[in-house]
Length: 127
Image 1 (cartoon, rainbow, N blue to C red):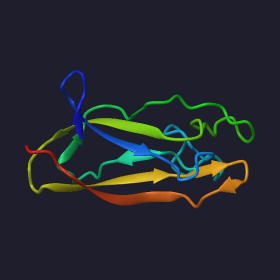
Image 2: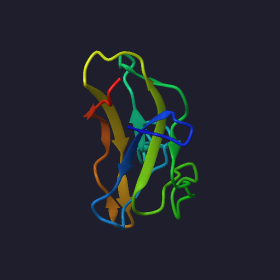
Image 3: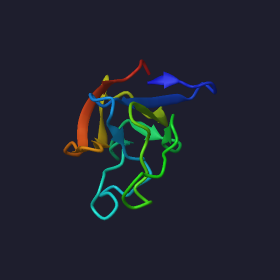
């Protein structure tokens, strides 16, 4: 977590495929993909979290139309993408919290298995 230029707390996650030729899918495609293809890059907060979402999920790179496949299956350029979510802390129940990530990486040779709703524990800043 970090503070943005307006002093709002922001939760960010950088998704970096191990193979630099792999691309990720846009945060804006459906959660189950387009006709079952792809999975969006997502950073999500559970409903019972002490972290309250106060804005829209944003990306540091714009998604593009794919070279092949359905046009709705938007992709990010090969390499890393950072997603950011404006948040605030509601209470300090604990020093850690769980967030969930979803993503799928592909290239011209094929796709890696999707990662869906993977729980990641993060440390919260001092309240």
